[in-house]
Length: 103
Image (cartoon, rainbow, N blue to C red):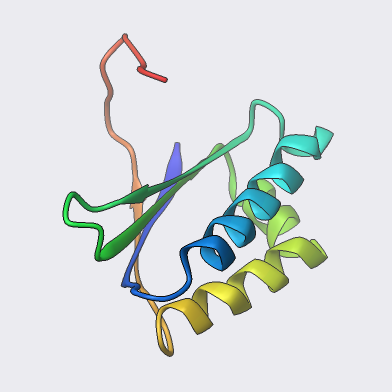
C-alpha cells in the first residue's frame, strides 16, 4: 500500500474548508474505479491549527487515474490556497498495520 501525508497550517473560513473537503471526498466515494483501491482521510490537529490529510492507494496506476480527474485538480488548488502557497507532503509505503481498523 502506498500513501501520502499532507500537512499545513490553516486559520481561515472553516465552512469553506469543510465544503472543499466534503466535495473532494464525495467525488472519491462516487468513483467506481477507486472503490477498494484508494482511501482518503482528513484530520485536524488537537489544537485546531494544522490540517493533516492521509491518502492510501494500491498501485501507481490508481494514483495516476485519480490525479487525472478534474476533481483532483480542483481540490489540489484549494489545498494550495488553504495552505498559503503549498503544503508539506511526504510519500510513504506502508510496511505493516494492525488487524483492527477503526472508523
